[in-house]
Length: 182
Image (tube, rainbow, N blue to C red; front, side, top):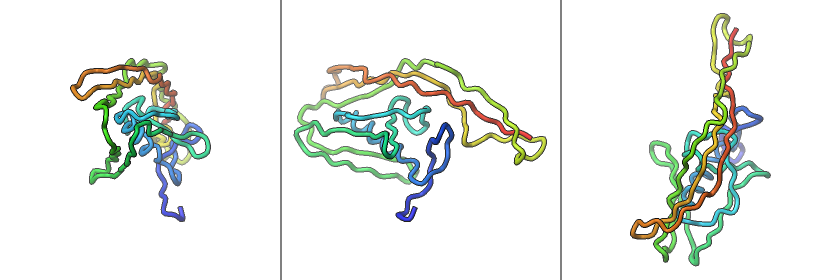
């Protein structure tokens, strides 16, 4: 906080809470997607516990200090430059610059979404809610448990598919929505 970091959403023990340094998964996920498109080697990647809202399912790369990281390797023969910025609409962009000697790039995609368990709505008594009313618990929004396959399609300069590979199957967990009442 002393260095200027602000609070942003993070998952802590199944709840969404604002934490200093929260929100770092958005740049790591955006960089991960850029690395797939640049066909760089991914050496470490973890999915979120729940489906993220800011990037496509299966395209996320969570980080958590000291235990989960996103890592990639520049497996090209030339240096690369990474540029990130936020536009006027607060969308994050990541661009990887380098020397393209092959004309091959990645076109990652996710498919085969399978619903594993639907989120339920749970009601909990809470004395802080005005009597006779209800309130959604913003820290416990519902998420369905889903499984999704992510593929890396490599395409040449003429747009022809060179190869398609299943990268992984991500299984996101369920989290029930909570409505507080009094």
